[in-house]
Length: 373
Ligand SMILES: Cc1cc2nc3c(=O)[nH]c(=O)nc-3n(C[C@H](O)[C@H](O)[C@H](O)COP(=O)(O)OP(=O)(O)OC[C@H]3O[C@@H](n4cnc5c(N)ncnc54)[C@H](O)[C@@H]3O)c2cc1C
Image (cartoon, rainbow, N blue to C red; front, side):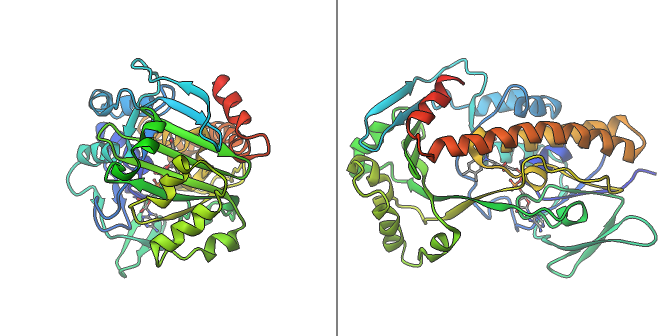
């Protein structure tokens, strides 16, 4: 009898896992808290690495479709100081081994690749417990419940599955992002938009930065980043978005108006994104029938550009192990051994890069980072 597999979370990790399992004829159900694929905009670009994200897409049989989503020209990178002086300028590389795609389009590709009914939308996991007869009972916020032999937590930073494996919790990194956007294409600040170049602009200084990406259709998405205590982060009032944005812009006093315009002119609802990370080197002992993929197991700052790539790779790797190895515990042990090694390495780099981005040596430390990559 085939074991029942419940995947909690329809992010890039959970979706890739389900897709690769289904490609090998193994059924799995994804329980996702959001009510539909369009509940939340996914925003932002991801560069998919040849050795991780793209390996996962090949395993999923979706690499050719992925290539049709690539946005050539948008991988250009520019680093400037707070006056807008260009310190590093890397043009777009049409043959890049790390092509950029829109996160929402990538997620849609994975969702559409699954058998109908695979994703149970509106199923927010509320609790999970092992049952005496074997297997695990999952109860959802709407009161419904299900039982599964294998449960995979792909439910991101605040995973409800993780406590079955480890008491570790994400810790605030000290850096907070505030989403900014010029959805209209920034008609009122054309000079600022032009300053981005064709890809991503990173304006950095000790303790702060403005990161803006220009899409081919002209719209701009990005973040203001501030090293601030959690209390300060909570004190910003975005009930009045323009007052909240002014409070953020005040932190960039003395910066070129060309750069602060990305904050003051932002025309999207501002979202706070405090950056949290799980401890570097996190491991857990084997717990029968349960494991984690992606951020649930190794949340890290975005500064190595690895989180989504690893989530997809985890999903594909775990699926292959479950398909190849009839003994579930042997499969999960083998998956986790490699998971711990790769996530430890990436989490270490992410933490170091975060320091480089907004540390005392910025912006020179960021230039050095790109010069050596
Ligand atoms: C600002 C920023 C920029 C980033 N840039 C990059 C980048 O350039 N490259 C890169 O590789 N990575 C990047 N990352 C990291 C990347 O976004 C994550 O690592 C990646 O999304 C993790 O995927 P996941 O599937 O593990 O989790 P998520 O994408 O978080 O998906 C988890 C899913 O689980 C669902 N869920 C949560 N709780 C429950 C519950 N209780 N019940 C049911 N469902 C639940 C959620 O609704 C969600 O759909 C960035 C992150 C941030 C914050």
